[in-house]
Length: 439
Image (cartoon, rainbow, N blue to C red; front, side, top):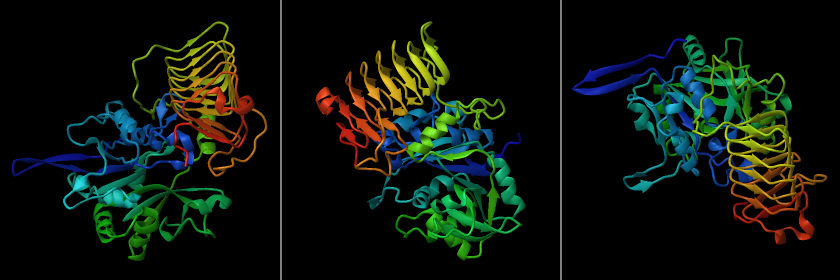
């Protein structure tokens, strides 16, 4: 694969680094539609596919595409994300020149300002980008699951003499209103851009992936610097369009999943265990890299039953597991049943417990003979927009006592005790929040 060119020149005795293209990865969002899964961790740091985290996918795309300079913009609950990224060793981004740099908000002369929008976050890091004298800047989101060769998109950008290239993909017409929509001609040039329109004129949806020619991006960010909550879809793209810049639509037809809801997150994980998965984690020519802790291999006892699962290292299975994704360091005790579920790392499923269509976050304990995902579903009384899809969601560091039953479209978080479950159960559509994190 052809690598993007990096030039190092000497000027007045100082090293001046020039990169053809750098990437700016937006990873500061809360991901509120994932409910209690993001109460203590940024959405890009949420576990995915057992041993991975969501941010592994765009980071892996960068290094596989020959991009060796990545700024990761963090803000909400950044500790676990920062720890995971470290100095970028798993992605070969521990470089003397470039590499990965975590970019949180910082105090400035006269004021301290949080990132207030996607474009505002990039604007606040103009000095970082300028230090590499890039020809192009790639803007990415840290919360999508996909594989993309950004070098191919850059070739498209160059061949169309574009100022801005937007990665787009077809979506069902009835879902188009949830996205930024582009109308493009046969030459790939964008004729119109609509941000989440009520009546979309096309089904080509923006993927939130942009390549800007650096002078165009810099000038737009400076011009819009006083815009409150400055955002690429709402402000920067319309600004460039209105000023006659050449905007091109790069159509992508591979696998891409926005795991922004509990339903899409669960579905994307379940797709990994299809007999022929649409999204293959193990392709030799396009590897997905992650931080790998030194832990023992998984152990499956002779009495256990395992069917169509992903089971990570360090996990011990003594019960029955089917159609599920199991993270590292999990223990599933004798007689426990886990089906159609996601269990994240260092969780213990006690003997005789049952999980059915459940998402259980990290460091939880599910008590003996408890049932998580029980009975018929009912709409959630507090947040039906989040807790739906007939799923039962357990937030991290949660303890569920033995012998209780928890219904569907529910959320449980914190250390709970038997008295928290009147008559021994939590009805479908309810929320039990002992951690004080549900809004």
